Image (cartoon, rainbow over all chains, first blue to last red; front, side, top):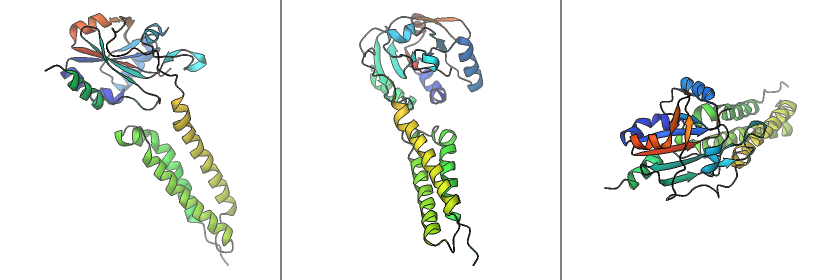
Amino acid sequence: MRSFQKHLSEFHDRGIEVVAISVDSPAESQRLCRSRGYGFPFVSDPDAAVIRQYGVLHPKGGEEGKDIARPAEFLVDSKGIIRWVNLTDDIRVRARPEAVLEVIDRLRPG
Amino acid sequence: MKRHWNVPIWVGFAIVLFALVSYIPLFVPLAATRDVPWVTYLLFLAGGWLLGFGLVRAFRDPQHYRGKISGSILAGLSVLLVGLFLFTILYFGKQIPSAANALHPGQPAPAFELPDSEGKDLTLSSLLKSHRAVLLVFYRGYW
């Protein structure tokens, strides 16, 4: 998240909003956003309903066997179509904003 | 004869400890060492080599060098700590289910309406109206 925050203006310059999704409550996200100064929305999916719909559920992956999201990134175009997906097989290894920006520039028509 | 303090054992152990505590603040934020912590591995090797060197010296030449007991303890502790680190990085980090069910490019993104950190509802459709695209970043949460 920190790396996305660092490159946030480059996403915004391209007309792209970054949205973080997890099972954390709004209060938990608020604490996180305030302490780290995140300038993009964090939305809360406590029942993992949306997480499940995108197929990125990690059943019982959280504390006390709570269902959480596995790390994943989806790029959705203005027509609501998924254009690019990144799925990791390692919790520590996430999409780098630089790589996502490259993909965005490649997909951009014209 | 006065026995020498076996410096490499202590320096080696200090390097192993430094490698462990420096990983998160120094090497996770760096793009070059985030995915594969090779600097940490090199530090482990350097520390391990010094520890081994000191330990061999202590056992071969106990009249001159201290460290048979302290060196053995520190070496054991180092093996344990490095093992724990490797287990976390190489095994625990990969304990996520397959993403076989994940949606593919070309599929429509399921609509959603979820509260943001201020408790205000945010919908995908409203985000897409005001932006050229949206990058959804799913994360495990900080609990």
